[in-house]
Image (cartoon, rainbow, N blue to C red; front, side, top):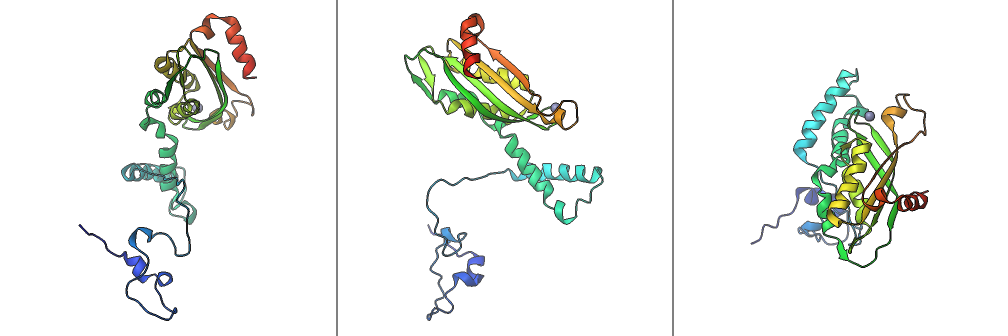
Length: 239
Ligand SMILES: [Zn+2]
């Protein structure tokens, strides 16, 4: 089956036709899959990031954002704001992508049997989230530890699930709990500890909180809860 066809913009784009090189051909040399790549731009075939947005969500949210712009007294049609509704709609889809991801599935896929039973600490994990009360950012660092009981998880999955839970509307307390619970449920370790230190823009920007004041939350299970020296060791390691 052949549904090969030449895109119109390729046919009409002078840079991809063969004017001036001595022989004129009606068939461009460039084949359809490369049509979007300007001639002379030879990219490597390595990693490519692909951003995907849902058109219906973008449209719906964009309309609401336009409404907000008008309500605050802006001219939503002025040049600087013309694409703002679409940009905001896409930004919010990015910032709330965690709703479409299953943190337990991410952990389950990366479990390994291992006899190591010392504390594993992943510290200074970047956290970027949105508070559910104001939909303003809060951000800071998460520190996560667990003591395995026969199985460990691929290290990169810890920051990954912090990200999945962060990319939703949150309160810091629940975010802390959810990270701990997911690890506890899937790995069934001897204990999990999660500490998050974050700065909330809804407090900083509205003057409720002095700039730089951090909110700290923690959630612990198993050995971290029962054993003060284990907890102390964790706290010492994340300082
Ligand atoms: Zn808030």
